[in-house]
Figure: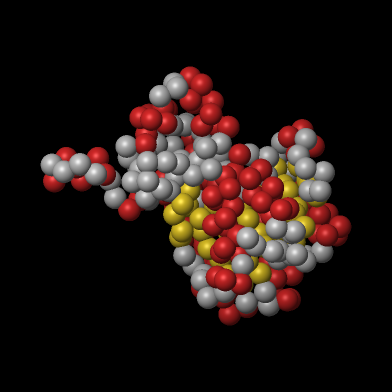
Length: 256
């Protein structure tokens, strides 16, 4: 489908469900893949073709050192995919101050740290692609408020990157998944087997994305096919943010 031969792709949050899907996809598309995650043990069990480093991305100096070490082995980064993310409290009622700080750090500041580590080489080549992985939660109050607020900030940061770095040959876009079939959701289904069936009524396509769907969207935005696309938010959400079929049916008394 895509061919990224000769390209160096840096993927953060590489050991998570979406991260593993991104790594596998870009390896299959012939890229050199650099994988960052805080879980070194998980990285050690991933594809041997990956060049990996375990690092806390909320630490700017450590992030730069880890990326510099990988770049020394592979060459400069052509495509940065800021995928790392995590969510602490599910609701404001249980949100602690440390949860707020944590979620902003890993979901927003970490992306900034990675851009800071790769941007000089992109400037020098007048070329580069930055893809930030956000969430539909950034525009909807559907739980995990600190995580959602951080991802909303990531949209604004993405647009700033597109506008300010566009004249330097750099494109920046954001992919916003809805529910994705990862291990985290499999764990929820193990506790409540009907969870997916209960959720499907809210999604116009009556299905959910898997990690490969996210990887395909990232690949398109990273490719020359999207050379005139920058500063956009691309939902990969089975239509969730297009409208609410349950509400529409209640309002119109029609079935959707």
